[in-house]
Image (cartoon, rainbow, N blue to C red; front, side, top):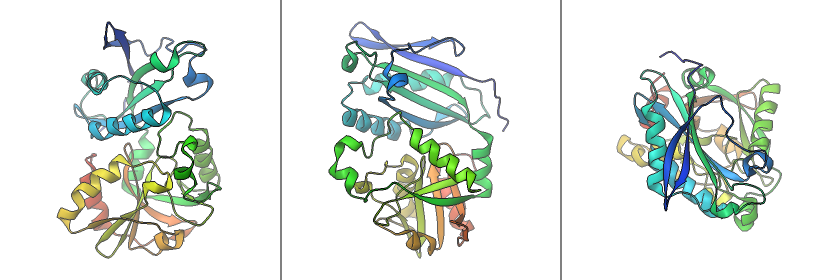
Length: 296
């Protein structure tokens, strides 16, 4: 598989009478206005899914999560069929043998306009960062960083937009930069009361005996589509899926630990805060197969 950096595709959903239509857009041409809420407020939602050999990975799960995000944001978006048409149009332009990341983006619209009823909606498709593909093979080093409040705060405070994949990723990107500054590849966020939560763009999984565990969405974490896909299949392979609370020490003591995401797939955690993590290569291989992404 060879990444082709110049590959870039953009398609837009536009109002077409009472429905929505797909229009292809020059990726080198401007798309947003200076007053779009995506640029001025980060007020909107997005999804990112893997594309390979003519197919998007689990688009249904991504569109279900998009619907939950839009409900939480109180944005009226296109219907499911229009989103699927946008996904299909982008995938149809993608060459075989190249791993791509397809992003669906929606903002509230224009500041000063009828924003809730006239959102900006588009999709992009580009090659996946080669580093993410390499991490699928080699594993990753992870550090813990606090989010600064207790695990139940976001569920009790809906305005904090827990479980919502919103556009504003400034904090997530800052956490990634801090991880790099510390010589690590990724972050495991922790709550002020000591619970392990999620990564900036990944879900944590860990194995205890024949149990495959992850953290609960009741903490306000984003429900991981790759984690859900794996959990739906794990039982048939002798792993009991468990959703539970855990501390960092619980995770560090596990028989294996992984970070899962839609673009990187499944990456085994090698170290957590500099401490070696027990490896489970057979489980790693199984989880990577269950994720539906190309094997490393």
